[in-house]
Image 1 (cartoon, rainbow, N blue to C red):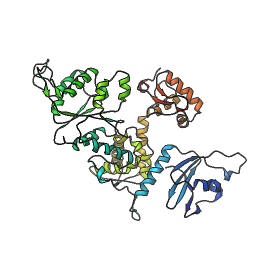
Image 2: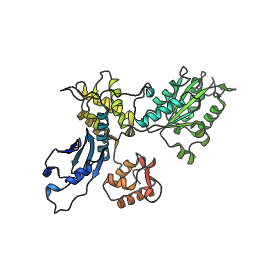
Image 3: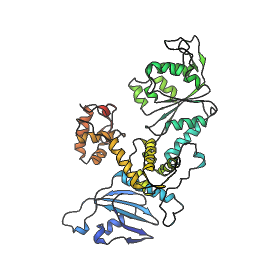
Image 4: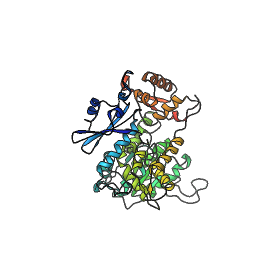
Length: 446
């Protein structure tokens, strides 16, 4: 996948050249320097002067990594990107933790990764450090009655984590009610949450309990809390403080003992500063704040997640080990939900019981073309910068390296985008960071 060649391998203090010096183009001093590395690193080697012999011209991209008792080196003429080095690191980490080697002639398959017993929660897969930290917080907060706010990108598993909190709490025998605040219209949200009595309005031909009363002595999961209208935020705050609700058209309040678990992919702190979300409701719900890591920060869990997805299909299949590198090199903007869709599509398109790397790369290539459309009436460089900034905070040197321009040119480009309101800027001087705004996703004509 990397289209590189192994240059050398150091085993028990001895250098084993895979190819002759005239071919691998690295000097012996550079080889010995790179062989001291104990972890996976990507190097950029500067070009030498033109009067050097062609066989001594150095490659621009080098990756070193430990193999056995020594270190190996991959090199090619083009620099290695970060996602490629990340893919190598993920595959090597999996190989280091694998105990049983596959039999002769059998394809290298990914077995189920072992998860510590204390971190096993039904429906939640993973054992990497960021995910273990999240599960530890779940175990600590589950027995309490306090509200929990789950924050993370779309597709990181916020609803599964909310259900795990409910099942691990003292309210596990009670109901678990889910409501998507973005999918309910503002005019009917009051009746949806608090209920109504017969004759309260036109069309109310029967009493309705409401979701808060349905979740009595249980858990109410408020998904996409940031999209809740401002009038409903006031009514919800009153209901949480009084632990009682008044249905629409009723004369008195009805008790509602509910634990709130809310989730959002928006920055509620920024919304509070912009007066689009009530500060008192934010502090009322944000008793315990749990941040879910994106899939790109959980690459060690790719093997376990892939095995979990493929084993749940009607015809369970196995994932070829070479396909793990293709999965690790993807950015996963849709996180675990996107991984689920990719593996299901690859399993349906593959023949036999094994999902090969060619099918996975084909599915990922098709999704990349659909997921990254170029905005109309916008220069290609500006469109590329905005796509990178939608993934989070970035610095000008990092963007310049990814786009392939100088830092000075990138600073001018970012200044123009910031003047149009498409880029958000924080920090000063060399600590300055940029991120795409919400309006930047829709703006394509200005």
